[in-house]
Image (cartoon, rainbow, N blue to C red):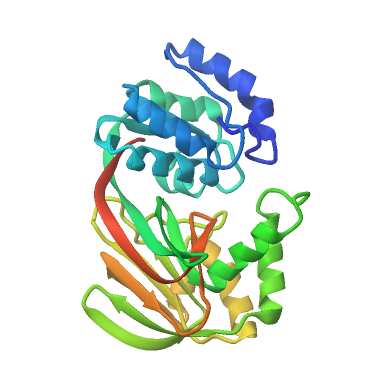
Length: 295
């Protein structure tokens, strides 16, 4: 449980959530995360310690760490991932249709239906060293990565989705579209882009319906390629993404692929589930049926 998630609201709600889980008849242990990376360590320990389920209580950042911990354990096939969406973004829970009301959300943990869900993994560079990161909702490069980098560097007094929006505003002034080579499975092309989003789930960035046709069980990414748009066009496209209407814009393409490779002679940043990972070149691969998810 990440008490800082949701601008601290998770910590304030936890007593009520805890009591409700007990009343629901669940037997469980809980741990408060102590900082960045701690949820990853806890999830790995739980997977190796014989637990049947690990529940992410927090937002998308907490969930991403738990996904990485479970898969790094090598024991993910024997454990189920549950989600209580108490953070600000909660894109994956939104995609699964899990209620933001914790009372309703707790019900799916009592007698859960389970699905085998795909997960994405990205391999890129960080400070000259190779790095790998799993993601459950979406990863991206281009403006998307630069916005996350700017948000990470922003003032810590800004919470919730505001760092992302401030990151967009700041990045718009300095960002230049990138020339990339993109390989979608066996198809290769050179193209100038504003951003590429590699989506496993349907939502990202606090509610953008970036991939309306995403499917967690088809073994494929939905790849959204935003082409060489100007700033005014971007301002027009941006709000339409919350409705999924961006897909009709002439400079937006949606492709399907199990592997995506992006290279560029320019510096191009990589994010995964809203976490800054590193910089390109990058390879994104789908990991089919990687996790058991309680829905």
